[in-house]
Image 1 (cartoon, rainbow, N blue to C red):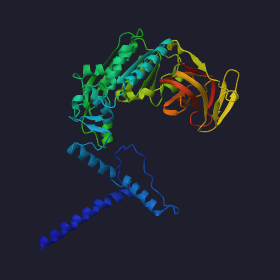
Image 2 (image 1 turned 120 degrees about the horizontal axis):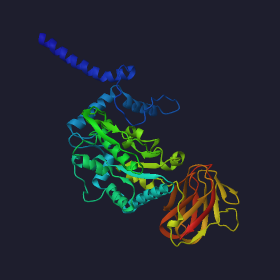
Image 3 (image 1 turned 180 degrees about the vertical axis):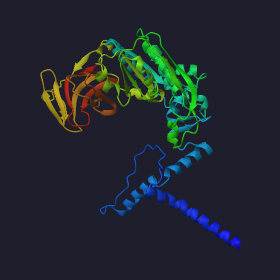
Image 4 (image 1 turned 90 degrees about the vertical axis):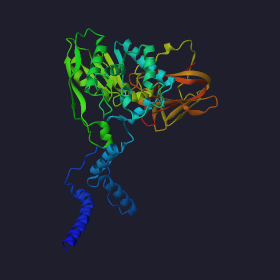
Length: 488
């Protein structure tokens, strides 16, 4: 009898536990009694739908199901448990953004192309990036500003030994290796952080194991190298920057955030020991990404003034003019895995220089679209002729001007503007001898208030028969155009 009672209690107990497990999420969902938000998910929060009689009820239930799936009680705990199981038991990444390595190392999947030497930039693209940088360096030099360019190396570039598999193409060159070679040839003022890291990796742990970034030890070495480089332009005086008090400490790391788990290990960190110079560096603009977040704050007292600008959120072309007054130094830093972004990065806030073209001939277009002798077609354009330039204003998203050209051989097209009021996105297209406007025959560029002359290169020189200038895909774009030249 006693055994039967125990069996009954056990069976009922299991049923009660099961009911408790499946009802707890519902209880939490409606009471929010516990704080169960553990994950830092980078997705739009699902909105609780309201029933609309005018819409099918199936749509309401579908949206409600999606909402419940994203918000049910203890959801984050279940996801974290699943992720812990994947990572620690099956050694598998639950996120496409994270690569699991050896010895507790994690890597960003954005590094894989560089590590494997796959989908790398062509030599032509690398040369274009380097040319843009040297043009910037020379333009800045002409107005009395010193320049330094640098790249923060990927973690897998410094610690390839902790990747689980070897590089697919180990004998090929990565984007950084290609760029460094051209940088040396063009005498770009370059701070070589890759060399710095490789020289110090046996002495220090330089990158967080569970994060994409270098740690405070590396940041201190980087800060020292930065001040040495830009300080060489001036009589800065003696200084020293070195890492001390090196220890292990808990830090929640960004790759673990992407995995949805807590960082399970202690990470190496340090304190910077700094002896500041007696003299200070002049006003400096630093364009950077997140790799400089733990570098720049420790260096504040080396500068009379320093303005830090994110190289994507506050790009060079839209901020330099605003902050350039009295600036004597510009630094540009970017992480290795984003070098491809420099291919179309707009450094050029200075007028393009025709002097680099030797022995050219040119033909000027008649910009007066109302002239009966001019073969020009405008679409949704207001036209205002002035004595020194022609004014155009867009009236719709499809506003454009097309000029017929008498089969001119073209290597470049020069556009000169007057009184540029604000930034605008423009595009210039050219038609081949058959009159066809093709996708690979378009140049997109940003009209900048501090720049009036634009030299558009035609990569594959050809006979052109038409030019089409499109005004920014929006209305109320105002242009004062002085000249368009076709250059051969």
